[in-house]
Amino acid sequence: MLRRHLLKLSAGVPAVFSALSSLGAFGRQDETTRRPIVVSTWDHGQAANEAAWKILVNNGRAVDSAEAGVRVTEADPSVSTVGFGGFPDRDGKVTLDACIQDETGNCGSVAFLQHVKHPVSVARKVMEETPHVMLVGEGALQFALEQGFKKENLLTEKARKAWDAWLEKAEYKPVINIENHDTIGLLALDAQGRMGGACTTSGAAFKMHGRVGDSPLIGAGLFVDGEVGAACATGMGELVIKTVGSHLVVELMYQGHSPRSACEQAVRRIAAKLPDYKDFQVGFLALNRKGQYGAFCIQPGFTYAVRSGELNRLSRSDSLL
View 1 (tube, one colour):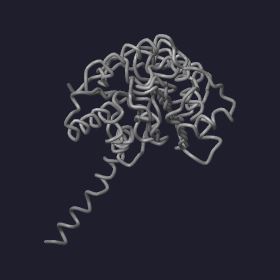
View 2 (cartoon, rainbow, N blue to C red):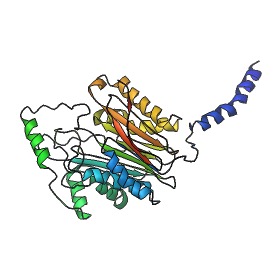
View 3 (cartoon, rainbow, N blue to C red):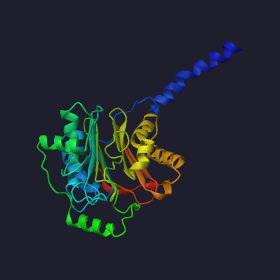
View 4 (cartoon, one colour):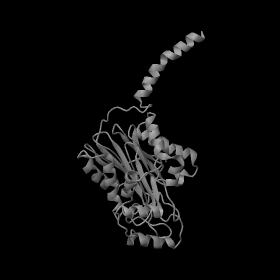
């Protein structure tokens, strides 16, 4: 009887293995059905997508499009959460974080970088010109200047006035969806099926001097696996770091979840583990090798932009609350 039972179980193994494979549980994915395509976080992602699309539509590489896209946001002084024009920390210093990753897993990152408008391009140089993944603070600035980047004042008059107003009470309390921690993350899939992503921010407004969030951390603010897909995060970085959010989303896609389902499960993981999650916003955005995309967040209000040959639109993410 035991022998018959074991034979019966073993007979079903190939079918189970085949079913799991078709779901992508072992990392297998069908050929992409929509490429090239680029997705990015928040309303300012639309302008970033256009710059990225110009590269993708001309058979450019995904990682190049990711860098070009977020550079648009970094240079826009009207965006108070990224690059030039970003709100300062509590000491009045604009400190920037960024990372970039390509389809092979190569990546570069900078954190607590001051005086350089395009931290994502410094991160790209870290990836390509050094044996390291991350440089921070004075070391990151020294490296950037050695690479030819210009040192400049990033505190705009608008940001300075906001800081002056904050100093009246000096109370640090992030406001959900109110432009004080809205990173831009951008994910791209090119015509050759290569993936790339970038994430850049000035961090939470009026943070403690020296604070670094999830955005420059590979696996937290951004993760790219060229065989599976890519994900990025936005919102309150501490919650993302504690759950290694973007890596979790990509791992869930590897196990067979759609991009949207993977993002939802990552948000639910935060809710299950962090009791104060209702006080914050976190959103995840994901793109797989099929060109399928999806997003999910804690609070209503997270938007993301999509650009492909058929689509050019801004969408609102589903939310847990």
